Length: 156
Image 1 (cartoon, one colour):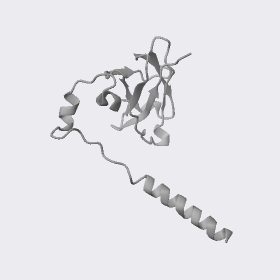
Image 2 (image 1 turned 120 degrees about the vertical axis):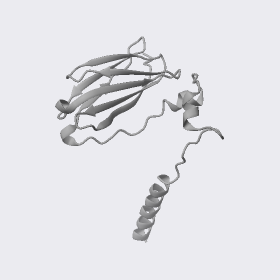
Image 3 (image 1 turned 135 degrees about the vertical axis):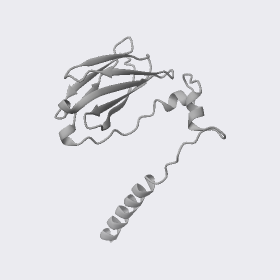
Image 4 (image 1 turned 120 degrees about the horizontal axis):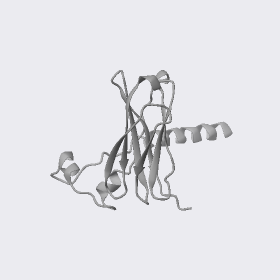
């Protein structure tokens, strides 16, 4: 009897996992609008378009021999977000690093980060939660998203 119960529980857990990945929906814009029209619309803090910029997505898997790390540090008291290039096994292959800041008030700011180890760029964020996305372009033409994080304003 115990064996049947264990097998039943395992099957139910597997079914739940399988169905959880299959229930996502594709976001659509208002009727009669294209994605280009939506991108042109002004965004305001608290609007759905501003909040959409604060939704993170998975990063890319970088081959081990091309791997580099970029650290998005905690916000400073004035909302500044330091982003540091830490290097890695693929640092000699890096052509450029682009850092994009999506602020909670709907602004999008882009900055270049140096390609030498410990190079830093400071982004002027808000005193709310902001999103930072880091793309690394390599000499071979590949571009990888190596970081996509939400950076809350520290309360202490």
